[in-house]
Length: 228
Image (cartoon, rainbow, N blue to C red; front, top):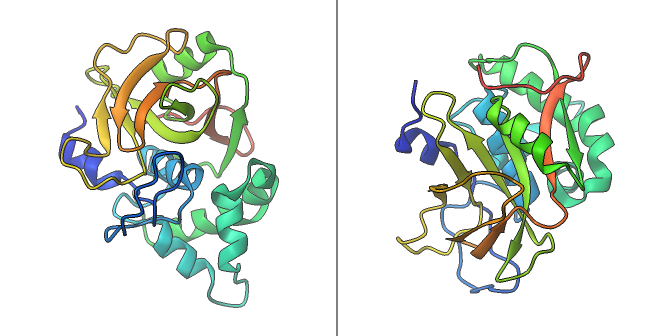
C-alpha cells in the first residue's frame, strides 16, 4: 500500500511552541506534543511502525501516564521522551514500556508485537543509515538549520515501502501553507549526500554533520523494527 498524503498528515506531531534561531513567537493552536522535537519525532516513528495508535498524540499519552498507582510525572516523562539524549536508558526502562502498555490496552493495530527499545547513533555511517531507511526502518534524524551543518533539530524520515518515496516530518509549526509539516524529499539519494529543503523550521540540511540517526529495535532481539 502506498502512503497517502492524508495518512502521513494524520501521523504528524506538532510542538507546543517554536524555539530556535528563527523563533516567531506565534502561539500554536494545534499542538499535539511538548516543545521537544526529539520527543515528537520519536512518537511519529513509533506510529509509523504501529507501536502506538495512529490516531493518538504524545500529549495525550503523557496525561495518561501521569495517572494511577504507577504514575510518571509529566516533567519526567517529557525529559525521557525527548528532553535529553542522556535520558534514553530511563526512556527504555520505564517510559517506553508504559507507553507500549497503553497501546495494548487501546487495542492498537500493532504491526510489531515485540516490546520495543529506542537506540541512536550520534555519528552514524551514512551507508548504514541508507540501508536502514531502504530496509523499511523509519528514522529520527538530526538536521542542521539555516546553513548550519551541526545538529540543531530533529525530524522523522520514512521511505514508503511500496513506491520508495522518502518523506520527512517536521514538528515545528510556522502556520504557513507553503510549509505543510510533511514533505516528500523529491531528489533524495543518500545520507552521504546532504539534502537541503525549506521546512517549517527553516532551511533544513538533512542530515546534520556528523550524521545522527535514532530508531526502534526489539527489546530482546536488538534488531531494528521495520514497517510491516
